[in-house]
Length: 176
Image (cartoon, rainbow, N blue to C red; front, side):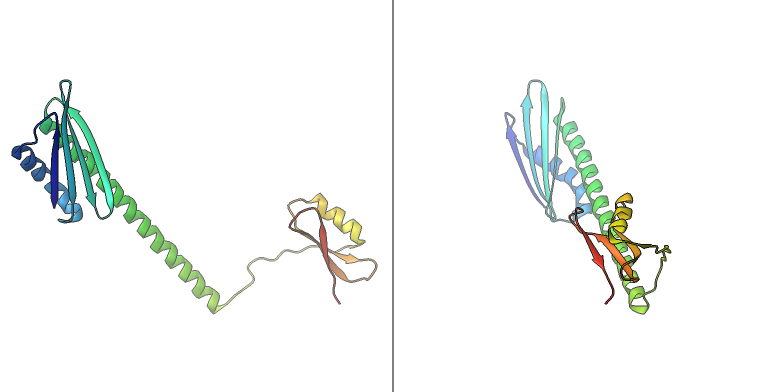
């Protein structure tokens, strides 16, 4: 644990450093001894301002509190930092849990695909004899559909008319 204390308009005493070190011990349970703490104390008007900056595991936590009593401001900063750390740890734990659940679901789905692929939905339609132009008009009537199946009256074979990606032009599928 590395603690640095500086004072602006207030002399940073050994007692302040000991007090900050004692209070920062509460944060050791979250990160171990690998913590860098920078404490800045200053006086503005009739208030004492304590600013704590904690660097641990690549994360930065900061709290600034003003109070008439400097030690009360430090206590409040420690409470704020603990809240920030708990929130961050909970968020990371939740993300890790969700990622592992998604990964398990993905692996489970891939296992099913390898075992057997099956048809899970069947749509029935009536293929009516009509011209290609009439089939395009039918497809235009249903903007949510991307293709329309019909029996071509010229060839007497099943054809499919479909919308191209630009949604302005159409294509046709004909058997050989």
